[in-house]
Length: 149
Image (cartoon, one colour):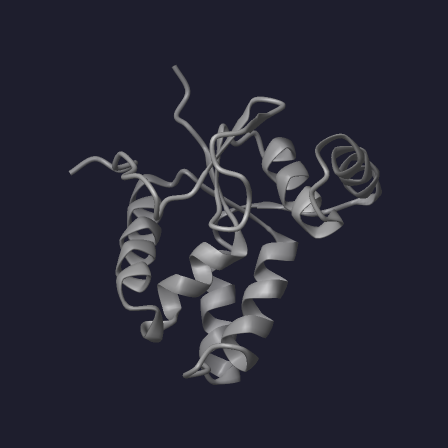
């Protein structure tokens, strides 16, 4: 049986680097380490773009540009979904059907395109499954470990 791929929404990665987020910081940091160890993490170019802007401009203790660039460079080693024209059109369809914002629909579409069976997000409606992708808030219920050991 193939291993479960896990797509992370931007907010989860931001919490992993935002020390002011306290408990969420620790939970997100552990989740990122677990996904690094397991190799199951999937991201999109949109997530990395949003992450860079947020950690350098929007969190209480912003990261330096070089530090944020190094993190993005590391995360580019994960499986990466590039949003192309078809992805944009599919996101518009998802928006129409499920009433998410366009940007959230593009996140969901990237998870679908990346073959993820789980999308972790604090912002999206947890408990919903869209085209085989289950959406869960990792801060509301404990998640299993994705790596061994």
